[in-house]
Amino acid sequence: KAGVTQTPRYLIKTRGQQVTLSCSPISGHRSVSWYQQTPGQGLQFLFEYFSETQRNKGNFPGRFSGRQFSNSRSEMNVSTLELGDSALYLCASSSRVWASGANVLTFGAGSRLTVL
Amino acid sequence: QKEVEQNSGPLSVPEGAIASLNCTYSDRGSQSFFWYRQYSGKSPELIMSIYSNGDKEDGRFTAQLNKASQYVSLLIRDSQPSDSATYLCAVKTGANNLFFGTGTRLTVIP
Image (cartoon, rainbow over all chains, first blue to last red; front, side, top):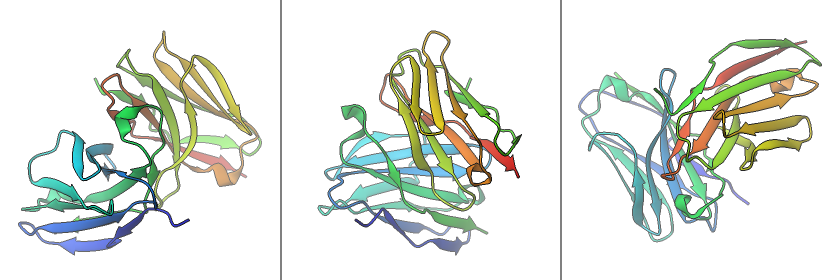
């Protein structure tokens, strides 16, 4: 059974540009969550999508957005990149919506974004 | 105050010793608690989950939960060099948000 697949694995952008990251969840999983990981702040929740609907959102500016497609694949977009957006962006999938109770997140390998 | 606090370490223990990792959280309504392990350059992987007060054992790992004191701990018995990693504590709050600590880096010395 394939795991969570994230593309691209590494990318370099310059300030002001935008970036789109992709995540394919484990087959059958309908919940996709996105996290930002930096050395100083650790893992911070961005948003969760379930059945193409955003179910929960973290405390990030509107430059960070996402969507989910009917096949559960998800994309996140960051517009007007800033130096502080340099981070590892992790996607995690789950079979159930996060708020439904005890469920488990399985993480992808991440997309490492460097903003110059 | 952060929702989840961990000592960033590094924590160094000799091979074969017990490694003790601690985590405190601020939301008394939290019900679900998780420990993830993250090797350098890799993604986090779940190693333990605990929902009730007390101890939960899985092989060499024991998770301990004390809701009254709002702390969670992870004990690793017979520590191996392969256990060297960053351990992330995660707490699902009463509002169903999942917060991670910044992680404790563990080094097991052969």
